Figure 1 (tube, rainbow, N blue to C red):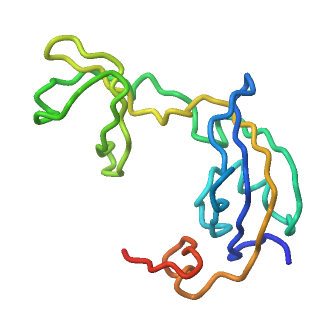
Figure 2 (cartoon, rainbow, N blue to C red):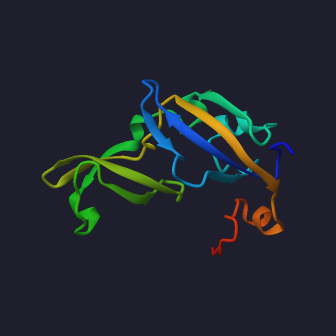
Length: 161
């Protein structure tokens, strides 16, 4: 069986940046499970997974445009500390917010200057070329429920929306 649209694939991975520093890995965990063709992983990796089979191992470099996107200076802004309603606001802290289109995004605190807080709404990996080492460990047909929900459900897991 090959990875094609509406298949659920599981893979082990190691993700590195341009300098070879490991950013993330499935080592010690169950591999990543996703519904192929449903935009559940970055586009460049999903494209590279197309047609692969169980036990296939490969490396792929995903440019920022096909990963988490380019960095946008417009996503960096200064807001009032009072907007955080008493939360512990320190450099590096992450909070959830909504972008102008109403979609959820994570924001990262970059600076705290008195009552002003500089936040960055870019994904932490925006602008980063991603280096993946992949091993496909399982492929199966998606269930009707997974297709309806648009994402894979873990084996034997209860799933609630």
